[in-house]
Amino acid sequence: MRFIFVNRFYWPDEQATAQLLTDLAEALAAAGHSVSVIASRPGRGFPSHESRLGVSLIRVSSTRWTRSALAGKLIDFASFYLGVLWHLALTARRGDVVVALTDPPLIGIGVGCVGWLKHARVMHWIQDIYPEVAITLSGHRWLGLAKPFRNLAWRAADRCVTLGDDMAATVVANGVPPGRVSVIPNWAPVGLGPATDADILALCTAWGISDKFVLLYSGNLGRVHDLDPLLDLAEQLRPVPRIVLVFVGGGPQHASLV
Image (cartoon, rainbow, N blue to C red):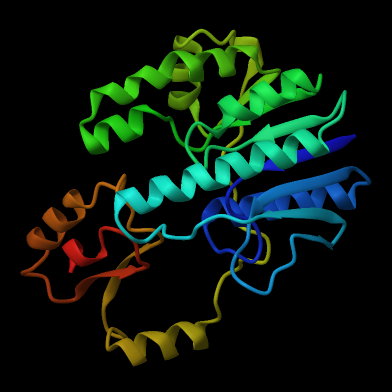
């Protein structure tokens, strides 16, 4: 089979969707399928087309202002969105399986249109529910104007894949037949394994927490992450010095968390 995946991030980017998509694409290629990925360029020096471990990579030139203000993020999304649709129109053929993730938001609408024109089979691998997430974060109710188009793309797809039952229920509630919704939880990235006791001790010693009970948050400190309960927990645990909360990661909420 011929698979074409669309996502803003892929190897060597370290975002969660980049790692998951890399695992899946390489596994499908190893199984003998033809696999292409349309993603953004991680930086200068990366060619627009290359092959890695059997996966054909198409790098779309776009802006990379993700960590700046919201306006910069919107420009990133728009520039990548247009580039993706152009390359997808040149790449997709009748019978291909085109899989759209949800970065940038609502990319599945355009991917669905191109897939329909090319007589390809379209799947949505839903990592976030947009525009609802954007409405909640920004308070801009007008973003809901995109919801009917999103729902139409979902309903027209051959399958929608969600991460859990709650997300699946949301997809079904917006008109997708239950028989075309699958739940596949995200997995630990390939190559990730338990650290050795020596490595753990060395790191804890370097951070001055070798004698502590550690509660660890490792990952993105994004706009959608609800960190207030963790701060409330830290306040309640203040009288217990042997317990320490450790945050590893960065993102838009880093400064406010500090």
